[in-house]
Amino acid sequence: MSTNENGDQTRRILGIDPGLNVTGYGVIESCRGRIRLREAGIVRGSSGASLATRVSEIHTGVVDVIENLQPEVVAIEELFSHYQRPRTAILMGHARGVICLAAAQRGLHVESYAATKVKKLITGSGRAPKTQVQFAVTRELQLTEVPEPHDVTDALAIALCHHYSMSNAVRL
Image 1 (tube, helix red, strand yellow):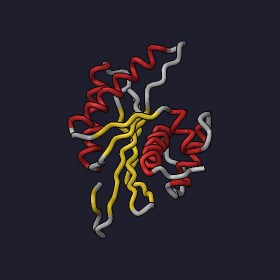
Image 2 (spheres, one colour):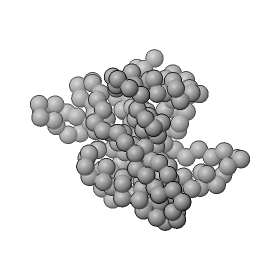
Image 3 (cartoon, helix red, strand yellow):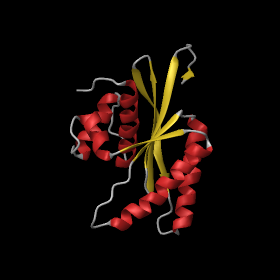
């Protein structure tokens, strides 16, 4: 935890939704029971570029986010493998790996969450559709618009999941 300008204890969480083309990120801060959005966006891997180039771009982008926003912990979505598309999980593992490497190089703890756990904690249902997750994130962070693209919403949902998991807040 860090201390803000008022001397209050603040926790800064970086949530990441890994992807080879688009990696969503969102940084939230919690202070005295209140949560606020610090920054959210995407890191792009060059579509059509080699795997090595794409993971290098993701690593560089995540390092920049970590250096600029100084989170204390990284929360990331676990890999999900569908039997019909095992190659997707393997490719996503590369993106997830360089994200974990970027965090480890900065001495940050990485916490992983299953998509169903994130959805359950944020919406009350582990099978919630994307629209319900978007609504919940928008409401929780008191945003005027739904974060776009969906990778950003997912990253913010992961950060919120970590916040609520660590604070043991009663959500339902």
